Image (cartoon, rainbow, N blue to C red; front, top):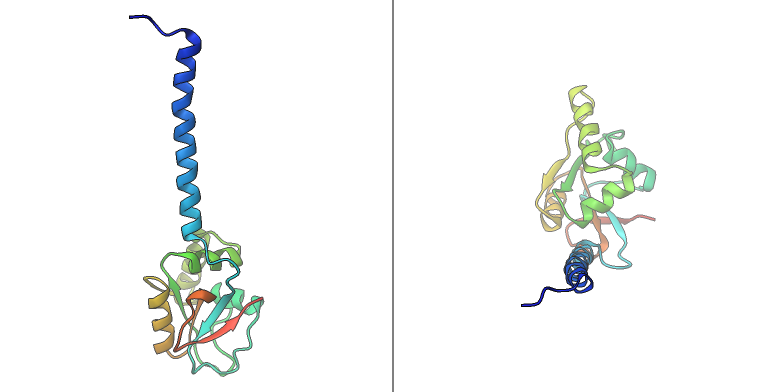
Length: 157
């Protein structure tokens, strides 16, 4: 049996890693597409319908979700709900300019100094919508395509 020439040997060994890299890149691309929010979807701050005077902007969103604002204008306590994972949580963290670890660390610091209560986490957007709908003073963040009944949505710029 004839031995492969060096040129043949190097070609066959480089084809497999390239094919593996392409397959890996394709898998990552598919994963990113599946996890990305719908194209052109607006982001919404959602509040319990009982919250009044919630004229909120991007700065108010930051203040609420970073624990700097703890009461609504009418004095009602703000209760924050977050999806444990998914596009809505990822988009919120991106808007806040925080990684998940930075976000949790900041909240733990607030809790241990008596400055706040940890946001409550739920499993996904449907549970987030339901929790905000049934909890007075509640607030959450979702991409528009996932907004639903029972909450008041405030579109964010």
